[in-house]
Image (cartoon, one colour):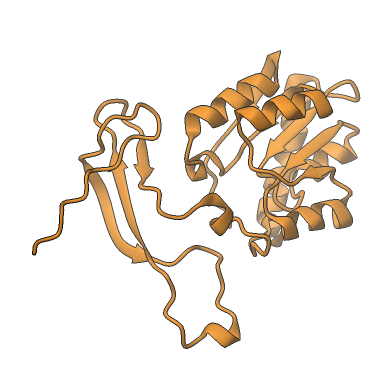
Length: 211
């Protein structure tokens, strides 16, 4: 009996059918999910790594296979502060944007996917109030305990933004570097950013390469 063909995935933004494969890199294990010694003889799960290009809105995206809490688990290993050159970039970025937006003690900077506090530490040292949002427990703990960065452990969403608006207030600057490409529901994520941002606020979001 032949297998029933699987329908093509749908675009994360406009829900159009994703029929165009831009790049197919085969199957790969989850990034930063290191194998424990007692699991060395167990086959590691691998997932398709295919980039689709939506021919309706032109968003390039991967098909979803792994749930966010399985990628950004409590023991997520990656720490942004491990790279000295990246820290220097973060410091210069903070200095530049503080000056450009005239941020000060009256302002509020929120970083979504703040990791170990690598960036917010420079806003803190400049006297700018900050809040980090980071779902991975271990790196969030490092941000709080090592750098004194107030960090909320959660996955950001429209509903979460409404809760945050009541608990921490709106933001003059929301930073979301290297995160949007990991979000399954990008429309919900962006709606949450709009909810949490002040009417005259600024959003900074880029896909970063760390060296």
